[in-house]
Image 1: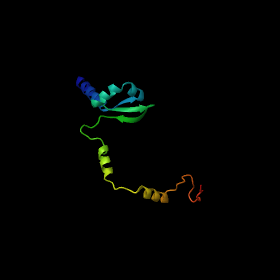
Image 2: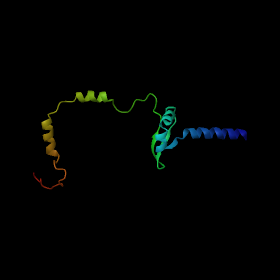
Image 3: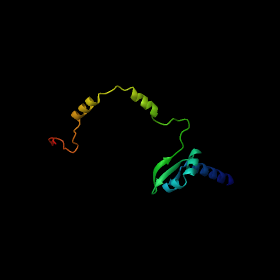
Image 4: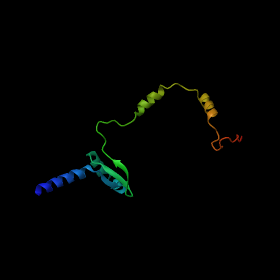
Length: 112
């Protein structure tokens, strides 16, 4: 019986540790440093608002780079784009986009 109790206690402890702890917005606001330390140590949280889960707070995967390109790489690519004639660009745009967004389709130009 003692062995069964020990196994049950171990299994329950392991299960509870695997489940993310639910925290409210207020808890996050008031206990941010403690929660951040817990996340840094591998713990996960489910953030709730009025009892409804709205976000998961989980540790960042070690060694994983942030998603998306770095800003410097984007600027470098933009510098390699061909130059455009701004006047021609806006002239072309005026031909396909109605300058009066409040006019119904098919309605004649109101004129100025």
